[in-house]
Image 1 (cartoon, rainbow, N blue to C red):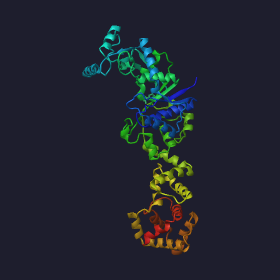
Image 2 (cartoon, protein in one colour):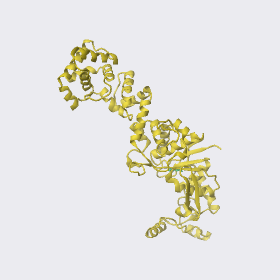
Image 3 (cartoon, protein in one colour):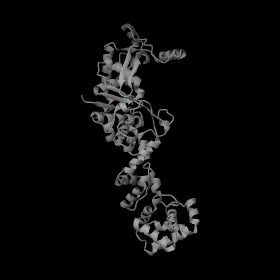
Image 4 (cartoon, protein in one colour):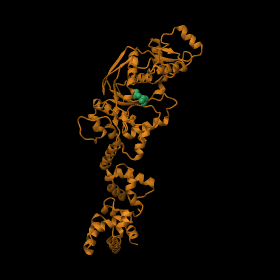
Length: 477
Ligand code: GLU
């Protein structure tokens, strides 16, 4: 039988890292078992669902490289089918109309609170007679449809991540609401647990992999599967992503949407690689830098951890820097050129741009670092305190004068790594000045401080953009 997995996001917000990680686990496992990865958009919360969020989720999946198969199913297109199944459950006696009003529910909650009991419905309308139902309807009362939950029933399944899970019917909060309120004999809009079961069955989903916050829903859904005589899929519940305080990662933790990670300059391959390790660790590999293809070959649901996965910026940054380092420089320079464009910085040539990218790529953590690190190559940096102190040293100004004269005498000779080194060597020998002083003086002229990337390679770039002379001149005026 074909193996089918799905992501079923609710488009009520931007694509969140938790949903992305669930998508990734589904995608990886689908690959591992040669199955299909599908999408279902659960957009039946009409007040909160927005098409722009659907777009954002699908774009985010593509950006991460998590392509799906088949046309995404839209849950809102299937409402009439969900209602047919609710009708079936009503007809078979597995469900019934419940007329409890909002006020009556509040009253019940208050009573339960006073007694220190957890909230649960008391199933008061489970056995209404036809006449009683008619009476409520003629009074204009609205009703929801409730699914009967046998309190004594034990629900059990073998979770692929957590092993055996058991729930008691009595712990599920009373009979389960399947649809929103409606007038007369109408059936209101179907709710999550019913719609999920009907749609997972329709899509022939064989493996449900989702966050552990759905464990109690799974217990409820298994009862609906049984009542509708549907074949059960296997279930896997993945750990939540936690912040540094061990609480569920939320908007308060600043960055949570995939867009934000992209805009900050994380590479999709790096973020996907990092997310795979959020709650999963392979038994068969020691490396933490693995492509999705490599991970999919060794991915096992049983290797997913049961406990929460702490989000670590440090690790994400490290993984991202590794991906930047190993990225082909031409490809990286195309990406970085876009950042420069936004800053309105224009490299003198493509070749120059590529050389600059090669120069800074090893010290970058995120793509945005390219802005700070390449800034002194586009804009004249001010001389900082440590640079000024260094220039007070007599030898440093002399050094710069000598270098300047050397360049002017040779008519602004075009520099490369070799002749730049020669200039330093020549001047050092001819004037008996330490090479270190010459280089540091140049560094201050170029970068305004004593730190920065490789000096000789930088000089080559400054020479090419014709800004080495001006930078030297400003220090010896
Ligand atoms: N729409 C649900 C959510 O976003 C899906 C849960 C499921 O995978 O069944 O949490």
